[in-house]
Image (cartoon, rainbow, N blue to C red):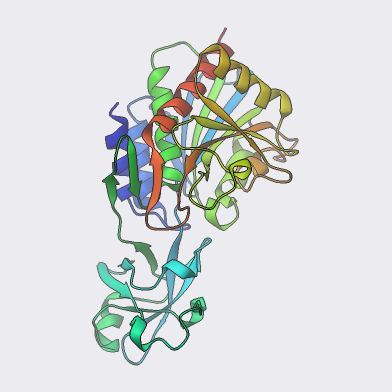
Length: 337
């Protein structure tokens, strides 16, 4: 598979939490190359592999949703008032180009006060004070847009220097790409256990898709493939991963220590670059849901270092996606022995 093309295609698909259909359908079409046992259930994309009913039942997950906004109402002047879907950094909203998912896609710009007219440049507007300009009257806007319509940052995916790319929704579409690449690597190999791939919905609003999917799937082992903070200017090296240095293997009280150690050992044996990510409490990923599903599952996080999280210009290194995929594939191959 062309990993760069896969990441780009996934990034350009729209899929705000609770309205993931476009991104989910694309991911489903990509997964069809590897299995016919596919479905979309409650927004979750589910693909099944291996020997049904055989133990252990392994689950590999990456969330398909992205952060975004939602229309709350239309003002008398035709501007859209909004709220957030997921963790939005209000500091970066002014003057961003967006697409409103109404009866048809409507382009808009988040309103911004010119700096030479701003009386308090240090003030960060509340989400309730922010509007979107779609260039319409109220009557025109109401023909195409309704309260509850979702909004995305204008999708893009750009190549930077080396193997780095910047784009919208890399959190966690690069994780989806890593899972697809791992499945591509083990394609055609006999898996004497049950394997389920999950591209889960609504992670950005409380890991909701993972919770209901895991209750239905009942895995013994669960891998949550997500992103984590990559080191950038002013950050602490002890709290961040480094781009280009491989997958970040998670250690946390809510994760299975033996499973984390197992991935570390495999990475060393296969000479795959890896990093350690220590989390003192919960992980903030779907692994938190998997570890307490029904009677629990052995869970681990595998994270791709990412800069500028939850902005329209997230940045990753494609080599980290590839090495994450190779680590997952090596685990699946070893589990088959």
